[in-house]
Image 1 (cartoon, protein in one colour):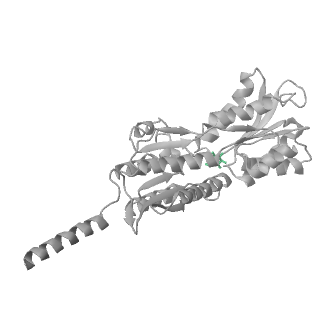
Image 2 (cartoon, rainbow, N blue to C red):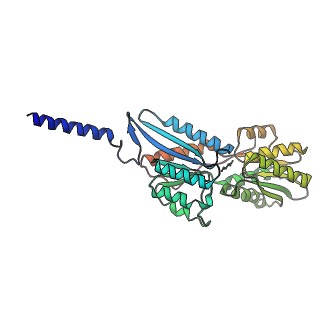
Image 3 (cartoon, rainbow, N blue to C red):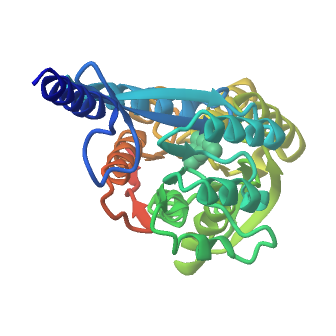
Length: 338
Ligand code: BGC
């Protein structure tokens, strides 16, 4: 009798232990359960903290994850700064893998040599949500698109062709189409973002295409790389205004941070936006929206960091729940002219 009781007791204890230690929820792709709540660990690698737009993005990402945490599920988010250094980011990815992250959100430093980084995450079986910078294959051959066939990989972003087109349309729709001196051509300078980001290439190309598609004639006075940075935007614009003076009719900036810098140089050169020069950016940073209202900037394009970060989080949650995800999630840009 005693023996039978001991056996039953042992059996009950084994079952209880198994229930505590086991993973909660069948069919999920990870997470640990303790004190009632299931906790998912998500690693977020940002290309560089020192970037106005990506700062808004990452703060919103964190806030939104927090808002989704409750008594039964928690998201433990680790956000790291790649410092614009691919070697550093590769180490961070290795750490994420060894720390057993349940999902990784990746804003690549270098889109042109991303295959290895992506590959190890895929091999580790960790869901991967790429954001903000769509990778190219290492040979520029879009080989990474094959990786997207993997059910656990996707890209969340905005189609930069649209933002470039909107920038061009803002100028096209001006009464003088940006041709201040009436010589029949729109003379512009282009201040480009980081060439590693396909957004920079597309914005450069499609802003001008919107003008030429409308049958307008353009003249490029200068095209320089400002790496998304305000100080570079200011410097490039100042040099161009000193060199080309009144010939500069339109300043195209691939983003608002550089447009903020350009605005400073425009004022310093005694030029007036809306009267003798036009200025456009992308992102719709709060400060730039106010400038558009005040007329000190011609227009900008909303790069919806809220829509993009929320989509990235929603997709991550889907993947964590073992649900299938699409290859691409696109968030629309919006023209801002007043
Ligand atoms: C944004 C830029 C930002 C860059 C970061 C772009 O989509 O428009 O403002 O600096 O992403 O990679």
